[in-house]
Length: 249
Image 1 (cartoon, one colour):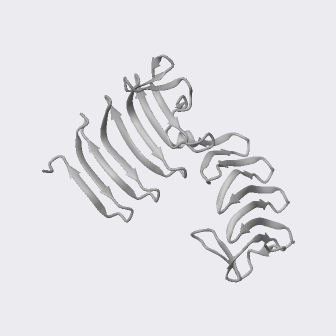
Image 2 (cartoon, helix red, strand yellow):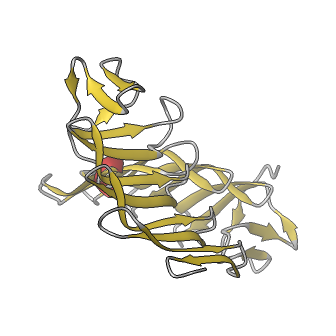
Image 3 (spheres, one colour):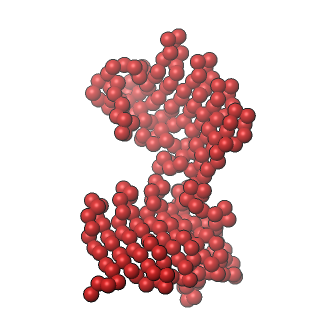
């Protein structure tokens, strides 16, 4: 770990544009990096660990007012990131989980009025009144193959998190207790995992699955009555590994 900050303008500093990793004199760098103005004040202060962005990141306006502040963990933004206008009023606030997934995004104008407000639910198309799968009033009746909320058949959306502090990874819709409408899945980093649609308790339309890399894994097409029309599968390289159609012998 370097005791003294190095300057971003140092010709021995190299930042990989694709990964954000920083090397100094050909080696992954651990320590602070600064960008200094001619008067000696800091414009930026960035922290690195073994080449990764890790720790505090802060920027200032020329008069010393903080311009932004946040934290990286192993090259991922985590926690609360904030930006301010030159007068000190807030401009932006982004909140990330430990995996670097953006949970909420808020932007204000100089007058303090909200310009943008987005959270995980709005990005993923989850209704404001959607119910968590952990809600004790929500229960699945195996005998009837039907979802209930309390004593009534459930109508609405159910979402699921693998852990209380984790991002939402599953979404299912119900009408009168039966699967109906969109069903969606995501990996922890927010990458789509699967998507499909139910109507009249049947799978309909196009259902898709993806690998964590974002490459397609499977595509299945159903008729309006739920009949299977086609199914295509790919491996992680993008090569077709299986293909089925209703006309196959």
